[in-house]
Every structure is written in C-alpha cells, then in structure tokens.
Image 1 (cartoon, rainbow, N blue to C red):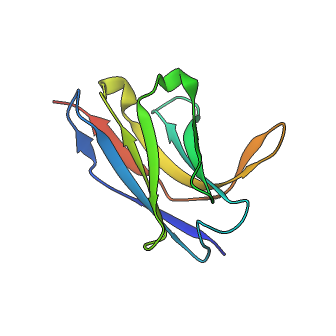
Image 2: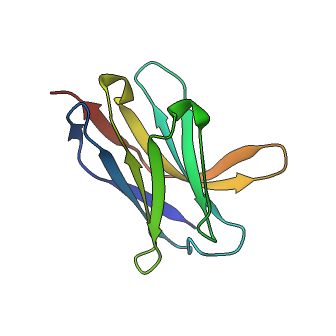
Length: 122
C-alpha cells in the first residue's frame, strides 16, 4: 500500500516561492510507468491539477499556471518536490500529492496524501 505525506511551510509571502515535499513509502517513485502529481484545492473550490513527474523523471504541468510550477525529485529519499514561483494570495489552498495513472485519454489519482494547507499572506 503506497502512502504519501506532504511537508513544507504553511505560510508563504506574496512574490516568494512555495516549496512542498512529498515523501512516498510502500512503493518507489522510480517504479516503471509510475507518475506522481501535485494537486491543489482552494477553499470552497474544486481540485486543480498542478503537474506530475514520471518514474523516468519527465514532467508535465497545467498550462493555466503559466510556467510557475516546477517538480523535481530525490530518488535516494523517495521524495518529489513542488516549487511554485511568484505566489499570490490566489495560490492559497490545500496542496495534495498523489500517485497518478496516465492513459492516452485520461489522468486519475489512486493514492493521496492527507494534504497540506498553504496560505499566501504578508
């Protein structure tokens, strides 16, 4: 059973970079055909996929976020990290990491972390 846990600062100032780490246990982030996503949910709004990193290290991002996110990994620690630059209060949300399945026509999430609240405020 794969388990995921988000960690990082809960408060970020506007214009700074948000950084969150997801630690994975019970499975390797380099296992074949694996994908690992970051997703967020602002209060009272729906889920928004931010991006993913694959088992080979390739990445893909939501174009709506206009080049601000970057996902990297540390395979020695079985972790992957989100950095989101130039944050504004609109980036305030609960951030989730999730194990991801990607097909030709869809993307869906099979295991989730518990979520980490990040507030952007001066």
